Figure 1: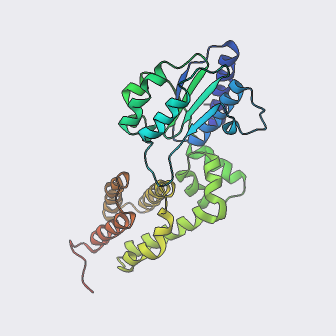
Figure 2: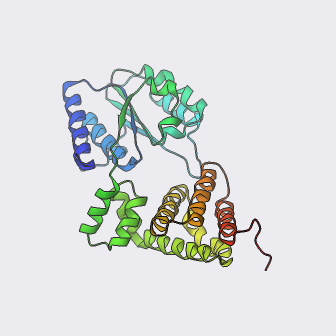
Length: 300
């Protein structure tokens, strides 16, 4: 079975060949959890189309427009899409490329505003959309693009690469479970983020499983710094799920299974605009109730 690197190399070769033959489609959606790999592929394709020097950052090329989430925003707005549409409204002698990051986080209005642009660009215009969640892409968008699935590195591949780089076995296992690529794994190990996260979660879960109500205060004092942005929040969900799963495998009992199920249910709230302090405190409260065997915590 081919690993992620081999699959990405095949994709790169396929696109480069299509460009040479002049058979590149005008609109693609690159879908997958490893968005860094997707962006690397898009950069390669765009560089070839624009005849950019490989040493340069193609995203700085004046004929490429990149749309991304604005600071503190969770969706791409209709205003951003209209701005993009206006830029590409006039024909150009040079190739033009639009790159839309987080295409699965467009509002319906934003997506609908570029349908005609995606369907009927000029001959030398190309639109590349990148996203993670297939279900969040409007069917009207999907019907107008070629879908490219970005291969994801397996836990085993990431774990083996980390071990080869001298990372301790337990740390490599943990990081491989919360990473979608070796590049992301390396980032999480930078400045000790992943290891500090593991230690904080371990201490928190130890307190919960010992039915220690100090676990409740631990949320605000030690956990909140690890959920300070959307990327860290997604990592935290994977990290806590991985730790709970590993503890359940080590000691498969009903209470631990109930705690795990409780986290999976409460983690669903993270998809909405809910306070992360509330999410973590709610889980702590419910988990302590499970460990205590009662419906209510004591008021000690």
